[in-house]
Image 1 (cartoon, rainbow, N blue to C red):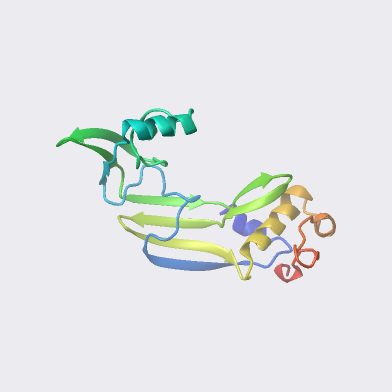
Image 2: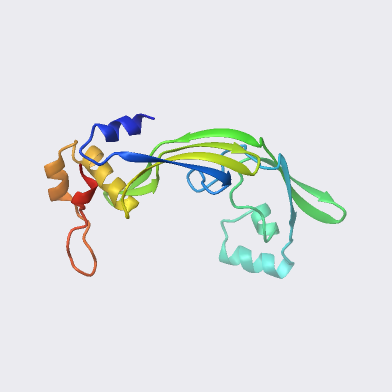
Length: 187
């Protein structure tokens, strides 16, 4: 991954590799990968809203249409192929996907109010049915968010000028009023 070399050549402490093998614990940007279904096919019995519930829900959320309005438990996030079937007088959400997937995810962050917000550490994951092998690259620090936000601030907002990054770092501790710039994250 490009980010590993970038951090290695930066004034920040290097990342450590952590390996996890077990049941699914790590996700890609909060979700499972697209077209991945650990059981190949999954089923969910859908619960219909009563006419009164539909009317109340529609009034409260006029922008919501279709299956979200009809069913109480229709999945919000759908990343695989799916179909809604009526079988045995019940409605079923049937999802179909691939149970084996390999995913590489770089550093995940967003810019919000002119500052970076860390979302996901770089990782590589092999999904195999309900199991995974994850290789995660994290800094050795108690506050991973601050490490990555400092790194992004230095790299993207201050053109890799460490002095400028420290001087323009706008985050302060709410209780003490002291800056949250942590020199322990630097080499």
